[in-house]
Amino acid sequence: AQRVTQPEKLLSVFKGAPVELKCNYSYSGSPELFWYVQYSRQRLQLLLRHISRESIKGFTADLNKGETSFHLKKPFAQEEDSAMYYCALRGNTDKLIFGTGTRLQVFP
Amino acid sequence: SQTIHQWPATLVQPVGSPLSLECTVEGTSNPNLYWYRQAAGRGLQLLFYSVGIGQISSEVPQNLSASRPQDRQFILSSKKLLLSDSGFYLCAWSRDRETQYFGPGTRLLVL
Image (tube, rainbow over all chains, first blue to last red; front, side, top):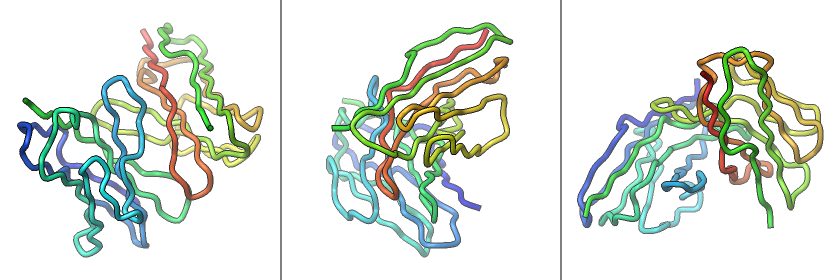
């Protein structure tokens, strides 16, 4: 079965601290992994996808097939990073399977 | 450019009343369309998706139904709302194997 697990509901850090939002998945084939973000009063939007291998707003995520993980990382958190973050998986169809989300709070 | 709209933004309905939420997409043709429910602590749950007019796939058994009467219109309905139908409903569109773009959402409260 396809499943995405985000074990942390809430992650609170101070500005300038490193951030790691955890995501583990369960899928028997080769998945595509995504991170979506929802800032306050804004629409859910794509942050990054593993096939792009790019850094967006300082965030990176590496697909680790051995550990079936796709953790989102940023070395120095900013207040404007405070948002709800969702990890998502796409298998061999066009459907996305989302995790339950992690709320990131960055304090000044 | 493509845009996606949802209507209404907020809705308060009594238990047992009908429901109709609308989603429309502009600037593209033959999109894949999706309805999600976003509930606290449960993330985004895919309810329905559609690859074309009149083609609807249901992901979870529930009190809701979906229809696609036109290429860029996706409607979420219920004949009789339950308290458990309360939540935040998101519509999304995509081209095949590409990014999904989400609408602003509809907040539904069933009393």
